[in-house]
Every structure is written in C-alpha cells, then in structure tokens.
Image (cartoon, rainbow, N blue to C red; front, side, top):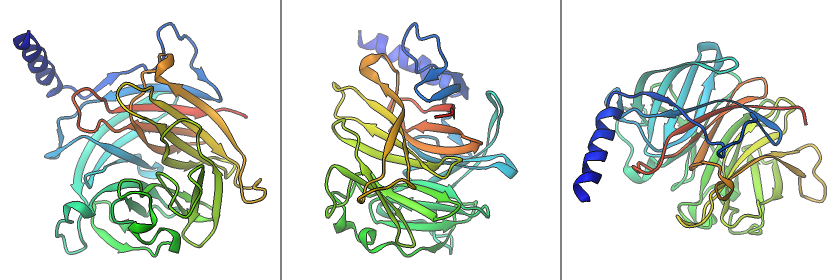
Length: 316
C-alpha cells in the first residue's frame, strides 16, 4: 500500500514540475449556474509552480493588481513577492510569471524570519505598493523588487503586538480607499474590542465597526474597495480538518453606520459542507470595475491548493 502512495506522489510531483495552470471548479457537483449570491464567477484556476525565479511558490496570502502595467503581484506569508503579467476580460486571458523577489531591508539585507510574516498588500492611487505584516504589526511601502522603502505610523490601537489577541491574529488585510487612504484590519478583533465586532482602521484615525461572521473562528483575511466606495471583505471560518470551511464575501456599508456599527450584506457564501470545494482563501485584488480575484493559501501542504477565482460583483 505504501509503495502505491509513494508512486502516486512521485507521478504527481513529476507532472507538477512542468505544470503551470489548471482549470479549477470550486462549485458543488451538478451546480450549473455561474451565479453565487450577488457575484458571478468568471473563471477559476489552480496554480502549480514549483519555483519562480528560484523562489518556492506557495502560501500566497494576498494579491495586488497594477492595471496600467498588467502586473499582478502575489505575496507569500514568508516574505516572497511574485510578479505575473495578467490580463482580464470575460475570463483570465493571460497569467504569466515574470519574476520573484524576497522582501528585504532598504540596504538589501534579509529580514529576520519573525519579521517577514507578510499578509496584506495593496497599491495606492499613484501605483505605490504597500505590505502589512502580522507577527510584528507594521505597514511598509515597498519597491516593486521587494525592498522596504519606509514604515508607516500605525493607529495606537494597532501599534503593539500585545494589543492583539494572539501573535498569529494581527494585521491581515490591507486596502487603498480613494477617500480615506490606506485601510487595514486585524484577522480577529483586538483585545479591547468585543470579540463579536470587527473593525476597519484608516491610518489617519477613522474606524468602521461591523458584526463579525457568525461562524466559529470567523476571521477577516482580505479587503478591497467596491466601485461605490464600500468595502468588500473576505472572511474565512475554519475550525479544524473535520469541520466545514466557510468562505464569505461581505459588503460593509461604511457610509450608513449608526450607533457605532456599519450594516453589512453577505454577497456570497461558500460552505464546504454543502459541496463547495473551497480552500484557505486569504487574498483579494480588484482588477476592473467591480471585478476581483481571490486566492487561497496552500499552507505549503500537499493536500491543499493555490486556487485563483475571478469574479464580478453584480448590482445589489
């Protein structure tokens, strides 16, 4: 029996060494519509790259798209930055790896392992690239080759690790709002906040609070901005290998907040117990008018996948 498993894994890795992109389908068996709630799935891919520019391709935690240059950056939570040429229409027309770099100090020296836990990434309105880090809370502006140019001051609620519930529950999401600038959110509510309330923070002091997903261990993993200025939040709920994995896309109406809470609407919900083949989705990027891609982190695990799903948010 063991030799058969070994043979299957050997064949798989031999094929994967030459493979790049496969078609994927996260929909339940027999699901024939491209509509899921208030979104329309346009394309789905599984990415398998043993290496890109000598860097092991795995554990992708976020995405950022520079439309003018057709560059899609993929960030791993081990401090690696992968750059693809990507074009989007009604499907993913092109996805070609260009290069890979490691995040490093401005002088070129490597970051210490515990300082390169990169989780969030976004471009601002001028094409400048930013990354957020989890274990030691920081947001940095970086060059396209991964060099850190400078660190930005954080709001007082987020400026020390002791203010988070755990060292692995720190800054997870990063987005650029045309009105409010850089926005960030922790994976789980900070210690001084109710465990049932999530908060989006601007670096200039604004806050928007909304109710956390009802699923156990519901966590914010990424954010992006919808065309109307509201926030698209990606949430993941995972309690263990024998529990359902639930991925939720939620709209947060930041202009309708009352009594300290912003209303929300679930745009799409993918529940593995109902046949959805979802993985550990952690990254989100806007690639066109109300069009986005989300990506899963394979945790560098043979049994998990790097899935890229291209979708459109419909009229609500």
